[in-house]
Length: 111
Length: 116
Image 1 (cartoon, rainbow over the protein chains, first blue to last red):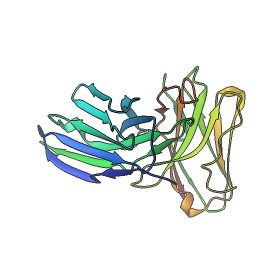
Image 2 (image 1 turned 90 degrees about the vertical axis):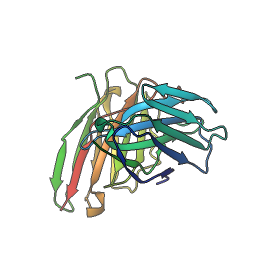
Image 3 (image 1 turned 90 degrees about the horizontal axis):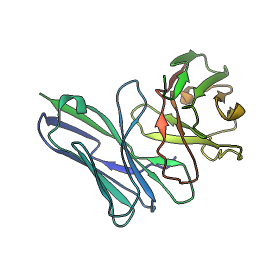
C-alpha cells in the first residue's frame, strides 16, 4: 500500500538533545497527524494539524503542516528517556477518512 | 477500559486455517478502521466502516480478507486460508465521526498474528 516518505529512519541521541523528523508526500493532504508507538501497543496520537502552515505545540513537541500541504515535521525538544519509541506521521486527504502512514522513525535516547 | 479493545492480543495458527480478529471500538464512535502493520513497517489501511454506509474495502489485499461490523459497534476481521505473508499486527481504530470531520483516530493495541 501507499506510504509516506519519513526520515530519518532511526535516530540515536543523548538525553537533553533536540530531535527533528519529517514526512513528505507526492499527494496533497488536508490533515497531518503525528503518532508515537511503544512496543506491543497501538499508536498514540501526539499532534493533529488541520491547516497549511499551522504550527502546533504539545509540551516539548512541536509540529508544522507544510505550506505546500505535501510535508510536515515534528520536533522534540530536550529529549528524555521516555521519548523512546517509533514515531509515525500520517496524512489524510480530502473527502476520505483513510490515513496514509509514514514508514516511521525509531528514536533511541541514551542517558 | 475506555479505549479501543482488540482480541486476541496474540494468535498463532497454521497455514491454511481461518482466523477471526475482534475489535470493540470506543463507545459512541461511529467510524471504525482496520490497519495492518508488518514487522518494522508503517500501518497499511485495510477497511473502513462509517455508520450505516457501505464500508470502504479498497485496502483489503485479497478476497481472503473480509470484515463485518454488527450493530454499528463490534467489528470482526476474518482471514480465510491464511498464508505466511499474512503474519503481521492487525490494528483497529475508531473515531467519533467520519467524513473528514477532523476527528483523530484512536488505536487499540492490536492483534499479533503469526502464521506457521
